[in-house]
Length: 256
Image (tube, rainbow, N blue to C red; front, side, top):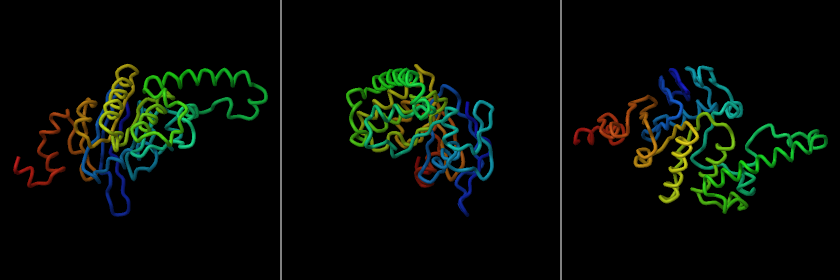
C-alpha cells in the first residue's frame, strides 16, 4: 500500500496541492480524475520523486519514501509513466525492454572480461522475459521495429511493457489513454486489467475518459483546486453534485 499524508505543494503563490491525504490499496486500480489544473499531475510528480513536497509525507508499505529521487523509487518498485511516451526512438522495441533492468552484469567492463559466461546467461534469461512481455502485450510482430515508428497507442503499450520488466509494486499511469484510438485503448485497458488480476499489479491512473475509468477502476478519487473532493465508486462519482459543479460549473449543478 502507498499512503500520502497531508501533502502540500506551493509554486510561488500557487497552492497546487492542498493538504492531500490518500491511500492506494495494494492489488487495486484507482482512478484519479478532476478538471485541468486540479493538481493531479503535481501529486503524481511528488509521489514519484520529481518534486519535493512543501510539507507532508509519502509512505510505501510503512516505509517513508518522501523526496526519494525517481531512480531510487524505481528500484523500490514505484513506477510512473507520462502522458507523452518516452521511448528510445532509434532502438528496436526489444532493446527498449532489454535495457530496463538495472545492475546488469554486462554494464561493468570488468565483468565483460572476466565473467562472459554469466553475462550470456543473464542475457538469455532477459531475452526470455522480453519475449513473454511482447507476447502478453501483443507486440511480438514489432519486436525489431524502431520504437520511434510505433503509433501513440503502441508506445503506451511499450511503456507498460517496461513496467513489466521489473518487480513493480505500484504503477502511476498519467493519461495512458491520451491520443490512443479506441481499438488500441481497449487493448491497453485489457492489458492493465490482466496485469492487475493475474499478476497483482497495483495501478493509479490519471484519466479523462470516464468510460475507460469506469471499465478499469475499483475506486475513483476526484481532485479540484489542489484538494481531494470525493472518493467513491464511478457510479457515485458521476452522481455527486459537487463533482458536477467542479467539472461543469455551478449553473450546471443547479440545472441538474
